[in-house]
Length: 239
Ligand code: CA
Image (cartoon, rainbow, N blue to C red; front, side, top):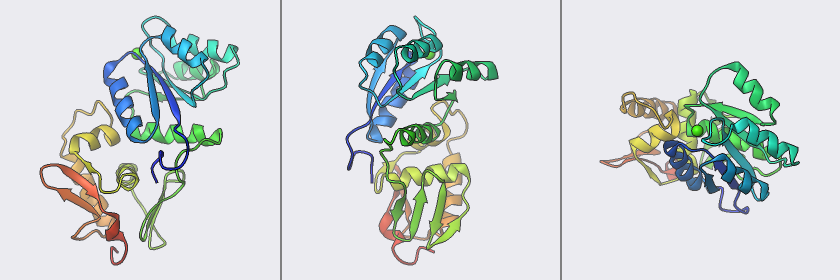
Protein backbone atom coordinates (compact mmCIF):
# COMPACT_ATOMS: atom_id res chain seq x y z
CA UNK A 1 0.00 0.00 0.00
CA UNK A 2 2.98 2.30 0.18
CA UNK A 3 4.15 4.30 -2.80
CA UNK A 4 7.14 2.07 -3.38
CA UNK A 5 5.27 -1.23 -3.48
CA UNK A 6 4.14 -1.44 -7.08
CA UNK A 7 5.04 1.42 -9.40
CA UNK A 8 8.41 2.85 -10.25
CA UNK A 9 9.60 5.51 -7.87
CA UNK A 10 8.33 9.00 -8.45
CA UNK A 11 11.17 11.50 -8.66
CA UNK A 12 10.78 14.85 -6.94
CA UNK A 13 13.15 17.80 -7.22
CA UNK A 14 13.13 20.22 -4.29
CA UNK A 15 14.60 23.67 -5.04
CA UNK A 16 14.94 25.41 -1.70
CA UNK A 17 17.78 26.82 0.39
CA UNK A 18 16.32 26.64 3.91
CA UNK A 19 17.87 23.58 5.61
CA UNK A 20 14.92 23.09 8.00
CA UNK A 21 12.58 22.71 5.07
CA UNK A 22 14.83 20.68 2.79
CA UNK A 23 15.51 18.24 5.62
CA UNK A 24 11.81 18.02 6.45
CA UNK A 25 11.00 17.31 2.79
CA UNK A 26 13.90 14.91 2.19
CA UNK A 27 12.98 12.73 5.17
CA UNK A 28 9.22 12.99 4.76
CA UNK A 29 9.08 12.36 1.02
CA UNK A 30 11.66 9.59 1.26
CA UNK A 31 9.49 7.96 3.89
CA UNK A 32 6.53 8.06 1.50
CA UNK A 33 8.52 6.29 -1.20
CA UNK A 34 9.47 9.28 -3.34
CA UNK A 35 12.97 9.68 -4.69
CA UNK A 36 14.12 13.16 -3.70
CA UNK A 37 16.88 15.42 -5.00
CA UNK A 38 17.63 18.74 -3.38
CA UNK A 39 18.94 21.85 -5.15
CA UNK A 40 19.94 24.58 -2.73
CA UNK A 41 20.07 27.36 -5.30
CA UNK A 42 18.29 28.34 -8.47
CA UNK A 43 21.14 27.60 -10.88
CA UNK A 44 21.46 24.01 -9.64
CA UNK A 45 17.69 23.69 -9.63
CA UNK A 46 17.44 24.86 -13.22
CA UNK A 47 20.22 22.54 -14.40
CA UNK A 48 18.62 19.50 -12.69
CA UNK A 49 15.11 20.43 -13.82
CA UNK A 50 16.28 20.78 -17.42
CA UNK A 51 17.51 17.20 -17.31
CA UNK A 52 13.81 16.36 -17.50
CA UNK A 53 14.05 13.41 -15.13
CA UNK A 54 11.54 14.63 -12.57
CA UNK A 55 7.87 13.88 -12.09
CA UNK A 56 7.33 16.93 -9.90
CA UNK A 57 9.23 20.03 -8.76
CA UNK A 58 8.78 21.76 -5.42
CA UNK A 59 10.11 25.26 -5.93
CA UNK A 60 10.68 27.94 -3.33
CA UNK A 61 9.90 31.51 -4.30
CA UNK A 62 12.94 32.96 -2.50
CA UNK A 63 16.24 31.47 -3.61
CA UNK A 64 19.70 32.85 -2.89
CA UNK A 65 20.62 33.48 -6.51
CA UNK A 66 17.33 33.66 -8.36
CA UNK A 67 13.65 34.37 -7.97
CA UNK A 68 11.64 31.14 -8.00
CA UNK A 69 9.23 32.80 -10.43
CA UNK A 70 12.07 33.35 -12.93
CA UNK A 71 13.11 29.74 -12.65
CA UNK A 72 9.53 28.67 -13.23
CA UNK A 73 9.17 30.93 -16.30
CA UNK A 74 12.43 29.67 -17.75
CA UNK A 75 11.37 26.04 -17.42
CA UNK A 76 8.03 26.73 -19.06
CA UNK A 77 9.69 28.77 -21.81
CA UNK A 78 11.94 25.77 -22.47
CA UNK A 79 8.84 23.61 -22.90
CA UNK A 80 9.13 21.69 -19.64
CA UNK A 81 5.66 20.59 -18.56
CA UNK A 82 6.59 18.98 -15.26
CA UNK A 83 4.15 19.89 -12.45
CA UNK A 84 5.54 22.70 -10.30
CA UNK A 85 4.42 23.35 -6.73
CA UNK A 86 5.57 26.76 -5.53
CA UNK A 87 6.39 27.44 -1.89
CA UNK A 88 5.91 30.97 -0.70
CA UNK A 89 6.60 32.49 2.70
CA UNK A 90 4.49 35.46 1.84
CA UNK A 91 0.77 35.56 2.18
CA UNK A 92 -0.05 38.19 -0.38
CA UNK A 93 -2.48 37.16 -3.02
CA UNK A 94 -0.31 38.94 -5.59
CA UNK A 95 2.53 36.45 -5.07
CA UNK A 96 0.24 33.52 -5.55
CA UNK A 97 -1.21 34.93 -8.72
CA UNK A 98 2.28 35.72 -9.99
CA UNK A 99 3.33 32.12 -9.27
CA UNK A 100 0.46 30.74 -11.29
CA UNK A 101 1.05 33.28 -14.07
CA UNK A 102 4.67 32.16 -14.23
CA UNK A 103 3.46 28.64 -14.95
CA UNK A 104 3.28 27.00 -11.52
CA UNK A 105 0.51 24.43 -11.10
CA UNK A 106 -0.17 25.08 -7.44
CA UNK A 107 1.34 26.84 -4.45
CA UNK A 108 1.63 26.31 -0.72
CA UNK A 109 2.11 29.08 1.81
CA UNK A 110 4.71 28.46 4.48
CA UNK A 111 4.35 27.11 7.07
CA UNK A 112 2.58 24.09 5.61
CA UNK A 113 1.99 20.66 7.07
CA UNK A 114 3.55 17.69 5.39
CA UNK A 115 0.18 15.99 4.98
CA UNK A 116 -1.11 19.05 3.13
CA UNK A 117 1.91 18.97 0.84
CA UNK A 118 1.40 15.26 0.15
CA UNK A 119 -2.22 15.85 -0.76
CA UNK A 120 -1.21 18.58 -3.24
CA UNK A 121 1.49 16.33 -4.73
CA UNK A 122 -1.02 13.53 -5.24
CA UNK A 123 -3.40 15.88 -7.04
CA UNK A 124 -0.65 16.97 -9.44
CA UNK A 125 0.57 13.44 -10.09
CA UNK A 126 -2.95 12.18 -10.61
CA UNK A 127 -3.53 14.88 -13.23
CA UNK A 128 -0.49 13.53 -15.06
CA UNK A 129 -1.53 9.92 -14.59
CA UNK A 130 1.32 9.28 -12.19
CA UNK A 131 -0.49 8.97 -8.88
CA UNK A 132 1.72 6.61 -6.91
CA UNK A 133 -0.75 5.77 -4.19
CA UNK A 134 -3.60 3.34 -4.04
CA UNK A 135 -6.76 5.39 -3.99
CA UNK A 136 -8.10 3.82 -0.83
CA UNK A 137 -6.25 2.66 2.26
CA UNK A 138 -7.94 -0.26 3.99
CA UNK A 139 -7.61 -1.99 7.33
CA UNK A 140 -10.34 -4.52 7.98
CA UNK A 141 -13.61 -2.61 8.33
CA UNK A 142 -11.89 0.73 8.05
CA UNK A 143 -11.41 2.47 4.68
CA UNK A 144 -9.83 5.85 3.99
CA UNK A 145 -9.73 7.58 0.64
CA UNK A 146 -6.92 10.17 0.52
CA UNK A 147 -8.33 11.78 -2.63
CA UNK A 148 -11.89 12.38 -1.43
CA UNK A 149 -10.92 12.49 2.26
CA UNK A 150 -13.77 10.12 3.08
CA UNK A 151 -13.45 7.59 5.88
CA UNK A 152 -15.83 4.72 6.51
CA UNK A 153 -15.99 2.15 9.28
CA UNK A 154 -18.03 -0.92 8.43
CA UNK A 155 -19.45 1.03 5.47
CA UNK A 156 -20.68 3.91 7.64
CA UNK A 157 -19.10 7.34 7.13
CA UNK A 158 -16.93 8.74 9.91
CA UNK A 159 -16.76 12.49 10.31
CA UNK A 160 -13.18 13.42 11.12
CA UNK A 161 -11.62 16.83 11.51
CA UNK A 162 -8.81 17.62 9.02
CA UNK A 163 -6.23 16.93 11.74
CA UNK A 164 -7.80 13.60 12.69
CA UNK A 165 -7.96 12.66 9.03
CA UNK A 166 -4.28 13.50 8.48
CA UNK A 167 -3.26 11.48 11.53
CA UNK A 168 -5.28 8.47 10.42
CA UNK A 169 -3.97 8.63 6.85
CA UNK A 170 -0.41 8.68 8.11
CA UNK A 171 -1.03 5.73 10.44
CA UNK A 172 -2.89 3.68 7.83
CA UNK A 173 -0.19 4.28 5.20
CA UNK A 174 2.42 2.92 7.62
CA UNK A 175 0.94 0.07 9.62
CA UNK A 176 2.81 -0.94 12.79
CA UNK A 177 5.34 1.83 12.32
CA UNK A 178 5.98 3.72 15.57
CA UNK A 179 5.58 7.48 15.21
CA UNK A 180 6.98 9.67 17.96
CA UNK A 181 5.00 12.67 19.08
CA UNK A 182 7.65 14.90 17.47
CA UNK A 183 7.31 13.18 14.10
CA UNK A 184 3.52 13.42 14.26
CA UNK A 185 3.76 17.12 15.09
CA UNK A 186 6.07 17.75 12.19
CA UNK A 187 4.04 15.65 9.76
CA UNK A 188 0.55 16.81 10.65
CA UNK A 189 0.95 20.22 12.30
CA UNK A 190 3.95 21.45 10.31
CA UNK A 191 7.72 21.64 10.63
CA UNK A 192 7.63 24.84 12.65
CA UNK A 193 4.90 24.01 15.13
CA UNK A 194 5.79 25.71 18.40
CA UNK A 195 2.75 25.02 20.55
CA UNK A 196 2.13 22.41 23.21
CA UNK A 197 3.25 18.92 22.02
CA UNK A 198 0.48 17.39 24.15
CA UNK A 199 -1.94 18.49 21.46
CA UNK A 200 -1.06 15.17 19.77
CA UNK A 201 -2.55 13.19 22.67
CA UNK A 202 -5.73 15.24 22.57
CA UNK A 203 -6.31 14.64 18.87
CA UNK A 204 -5.43 10.95 19.08
CA UNK A 205 -7.87 10.59 21.93
CA UNK A 206 -10.64 12.17 19.82
CA UNK A 207 -9.72 10.00 16.86
CA UNK A 208 -9.86 6.86 19.01
CA UNK A 209 -13.29 7.88 20.28
CA UNK A 210 -14.59 8.28 16.74
CA UNK A 211 -13.11 4.94 15.73
CA UNK A 212 -14.60 3.27 18.80
CA UNK A 213 -11.04 2.19 19.45
CA UNK A 214 -10.78 0.13 22.64
CA UNK A 215 -7.84 -1.91 24.00
CA UNK A 216 -5.97 -3.63 22.46
CA UNK A 217 -6.13 -0.60 20.30
CA UNK A 218 -6.01 0.13 16.61
CA UNK A 219 -3.92 3.20 17.47
CA UNK A 220 -1.70 1.84 20.18
CA UNK A 221 0.40 3.82 22.61
CA UNK A 222 3.95 2.53 22.54
CA UNK A 223 5.20 3.51 25.96
CA UNK A 224 8.05 6.02 25.83
CA UNK A 225 8.16 5.88 22.02
CA UNK A 226 4.91 7.14 20.49
CA UNK A 227 2.01 5.58 18.63
CA UNK A 228 1.57 2.77 16.13
CA UNK A 229 -1.37 1.64 14.00
CA UNK A 230 -2.35 -2.04 14.31
CA UNK A 231 -4.65 -2.86 11.38
CA UNK A 232 -5.52 -6.32 12.74
CA UNK A 233 -7.65 -4.56 15.39
CA UNK A 234 -10.01 -3.33 12.66
CA UNK A 235 -10.89 -6.85 11.56
CA UNK A 236 -13.82 -7.55 13.86
CA UNK A 237 -15.35 -5.58 16.70
CA UNK A 238 -13.56 -2.26 16.40
CA UNK A 239 -16.90 -0.45 16.31
CA1 CA B 1 14.15 29.99 0.35
